[in-house]
Each structure stands twice: as C-alpha cells, then as structure tokens.
Image (cartoon, rainbow, N blue to C red; front, top):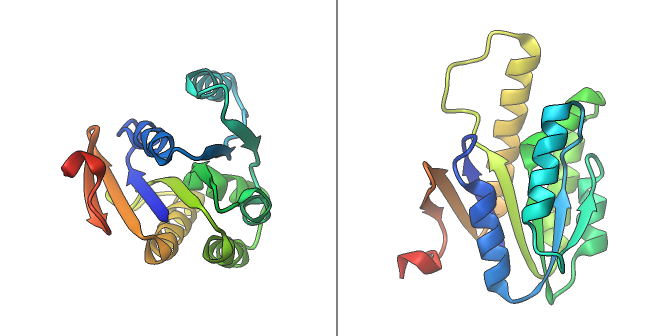
Length: 175
C-alpha cells in the first residue's frame, strides 16, 4: 500500500507517518531527505533521529530517492519517506531536471513492493510566492504531490494534528 501524508508545517505529518509505519508490524526503513545546511536544521534532524525507534533502519538520501526506494523495498518491509518537499528543495539546489526526477520516483513507487508511506508539505494553500525560486518550488511540490497522490492507495491531509482522509481506506482511528 502506498500512503501519502500531506499537511502544513507542524501539522503532525511525521508523527502520523511513524504511527502508521509502526502499525504495519513490518521491518521499517526510514528514508530521510533532509540536509543539515544550518544549525537549526541540524537540530531538527537530531530531534527526529532521537524520536525514531532504534531498530528502524535509517537511510539518509537527499537526492537519489527513486534508486533508494528500489534498493530498499521488499514485500515484508515498510518504507517511510520523510519528506518529499525537502527532496524537491534539494533537487532545485542541484539544478536537477525535476520532471525526469518526478517520473523516476513515480516509476519506482509503481514497481516497489511492501508498504510505502510518504510525507510531504501541502504548499498550495497560501498566496502565490513573490520570488521566482519560491514560485518554482511551490509549483514543483504541487506537481509532485499530484503525481504521488494519483498513485497512492491512501491520501491523508493533516490539519492541526487531525488526520483527514482524502482518498482510500479509512484510517484505523476512524473505525
């Protein structure tokens, strides 16, 4: 099953994704896309690391997400990818061909076995950003979220810590 967890900053996306990963009962591989480019981000990364169960395998991969998914996937495994919007940022900073990267990611998701949980920020609910790079980021993140949501079996939007099912089966907490 592919699950996409969307929401704004501090909406509870990662917390829900980790709960869902635990609930699978499978071996969890946590694929982290963040890069510690400043002290505040280093602190965030350390906090996330310390909150993860020690028996989860962590793969830190800021750019090569498609190949990492294909290498880590297995029928008895859960991949938790946090987060797609940081991955988009990394791609933009590397001047990557984002359309090709998005297509490769979607192909990897289509071919992967096991459970996959992806976390992404919903960036399209505010005003159109002023700067060119900010607008490009918002556009690219939106196109990526649309592509992944189309593939996903379940899409959940987090609002103030409350999961709102957008697509797919009910969450365990709704039953």
